[in-house]
Amino acid sequence: MIRKFQRQDLEAAVKIWLAANKEAHDFIDPCYWEGYKDAVKEMFLQAEIYVFETEDMMEEIFDETGGILGFIGLDKDYVEGIFVRGDVRSQSIGKQLLDFVKQKRKRLELNVYVKNKRAVQFYEREGFCIQREGKDAETGEKEYCMLWIK
Image (cartoon, rainbow, N blue to C red; front, top):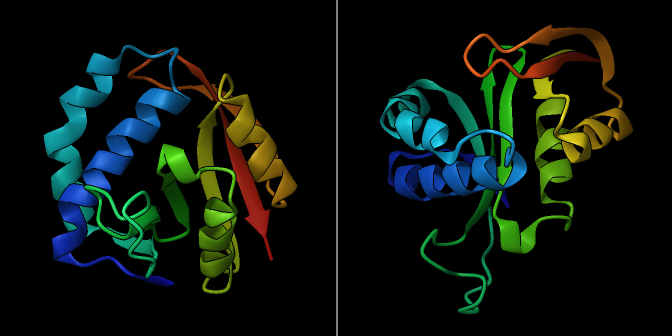
């Protein structure tokens, strides 16, 4: 089930965000992500976020993140990120979250690290096109700006 983020989801979302960033971006020092944890908490409270929640109470699924398996964050038409728990990745949760927001928007834009090949392939498969290549000012990593239009 996909629903709007609520304040009580904050700690679970931050855990998922941190773990997903460390796993997907192993080319960036993990301390970088740790350093943003508090700022991200504040941003989450202001952002438009939708969470994917399971109603399955099986212990192996319902862990310290509760029933939240992933989420997508938006700033208007910009996708800040899609984050899915590592143990349930590649089970179409990210796709379902993206499809959900595609129904709400006519266009979506995002940036993705070039080295995050799995994410680049995912977004291309979902209809996003690379518009340009740039460099993340904070990490120095190359990134693609990608666009989807309905």
